[in-house]
Length: 345
Image (cartoon, rainbow, N blue to C red; front, top):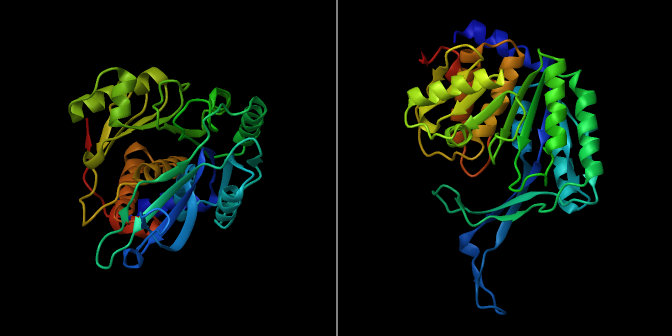
């Protein structure tokens, strides 16, 4: 991608309005200094002394963080937190992001705020080392009135959006934000506005979703099609076939091989990943891809251009260790503006 085209696409980001609908987690990092270890008098077990705590929006919040870093002008967070201390932290972290609107981010006394608590051992001269996480989630169905409220808000908001991103992050169906009611609301919005960019992603796979724009990894593609792809040609064929069946774009990330995307009725396009430049941490790379695809497509990028920008964003993020990172326009420009090879399949 040449520099002129790069700035033409990314220069539209400040005028965009994008909603992120999904499960907003609180990412809480506990920085542990191993030099301050103790043994508990009461239990005889090692004590990990936490010397710093930092918190940031995670899961759907990671997509939002990346859209903020891209300079998208208006961002609607659609979801919920609990009426608890973690919810206070999450709302405060979201409110601190420029351009983020919280009118449709609900505080629900019936739910707890989902948390990824990540203890990190920080040793001089070593990359951060993550210990076992301590997670908090909801394991019961989302109350029907809360589901209806979220679906109604999505429908009302959709007519004012350039793009809509759905992220289903929970382990058990119907316990988070992206329930069947919310999926159908997104589908109705897509049918009413064919120009609306919609991208859906789910950690459990997208097999139970209505036909929307899909972003998934190669394992999820295999589960959805019933046949695990064994090579790039198979991934490309299955991606194109799935786009043809849904009538919407499909994007499939394939780790170090990059990404494949297809529009209905067209051949798949492959864009390779950029070379690794040192130690990596892949946490958050997929969310950076989703954010970059949504912003680029909403700004008029074609399939290849959107995927080139997404691969540059992912490359920036995986080289940020000990955090769920983001990629800014200047960072992406250093990799994407000037062009990298890609191929049609």
